[in-house]
Structure formats: C-alpha cells, structure tokens
Image (tube, rainbow, N blue to C red; front, side, top):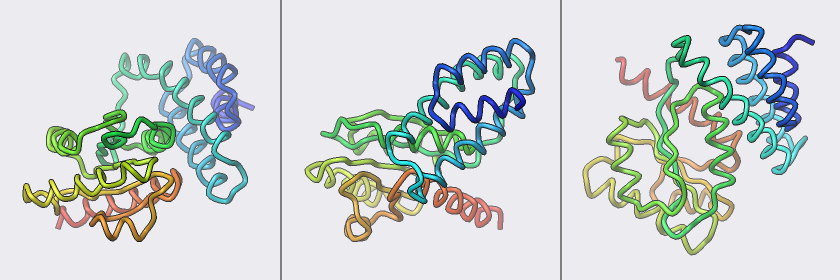
Length: 219
C-alpha cells in the first residue's frame, strides 16, 4: 500500500494518530500534494457513502472527520508554501443558529464539504440570523447552511429566510437546513430550499445545486 492509500485508509477508519504519523512521513518524503488531496477527497466520499448505506454510524463518521481535519492541518502549510490551490466548487456559509450550541453535525458537514472542494466559512454556534447574511454577502456565497439541534431553536432558521426576503436577497442564496429535529415539512414551512438529512446527502445535494447555479449563471 502506497503512502497516500495508507493515509486515506487511516482517515476512513478514524485512526487519527496513525493518519497524522503517516502524513508527516509522506510530507517529509515530498509526496505529491495534489494526489494526497485527491486521495482524501475520495476517502471522505466513501465514508459518506458508507454512512448513507448504514454500514457505519455517527461515531465512526465523526472519527473519520476528525482524522481528516488533523491531516489537512498538516498538509495546508505545505500547500500554501507550494501555492497549491484548487478552484472552489462553490462557497458555503454555515453555522448553528442563535440559542443553539451544538456543533458536531455541522462540523462533519464542513469537513466533507471541504474535502469535496467547497470553500466553507464556519460561523460556529449560537449565530445571529443577520450574521449569516452579512457573511454570505461578504464572501459572495452560493449557499447558506443553518443547523439547529433543538426544536426550540428551529424558528431561528426561519428568521434567516425572513431577513433575506426583507432585504430582497432571497433568490441570491440556496438555503439548506440541517439538524436532528429538521424535517422536509419544516423546510417547506420555513421557506428554505433544501434539507440535509445527513452529512453525505447534504454534500451530494449541494454539489448538484451549485453546479446548476453556475451553469445557469453562465448562460
């Protein structure tokens, strides 16, 4: 097994320490960073597929995401030194809504989005509705993602939609909602565009959404 395949395997299995050690060795040996990123991208897509097919569950997916984050933390300085930058598939602003401090699900989505080539701006938790919009305007986002892990904070997701409408910006952004209590019915009621039932589905859906948006803009 070559170095990149080994790193990808460790990431998929959530073996963070082994992944970090193998990455350090690969970087020291001058591994091809393009090949490393491509390998990690495929690895995380496979993790998402396995999760969607219930071959693994949330704890395993979280471990894989953490291993991926640890590897990227090592690789990014070398990528910057070599001025290696992939063109972003799209730009996403994401956070957990006001009053809600849960971040695990959001962080998994962020890791997978970045692995698939999205530029992601993480606002963190307990984010005011207006701050989602300000950041989206600042970075020229394609997508606003709002997570809520408690039923009591779900109305804050709808507040983002209402503010976008009030500012005449609603058509500018695809708004995706996420979180354990979120349902398709709530997405329709809140006036959002889509719902990420899990991280893998959210990433797959947003890839298609941004591809359509950019194709339409090019016409």
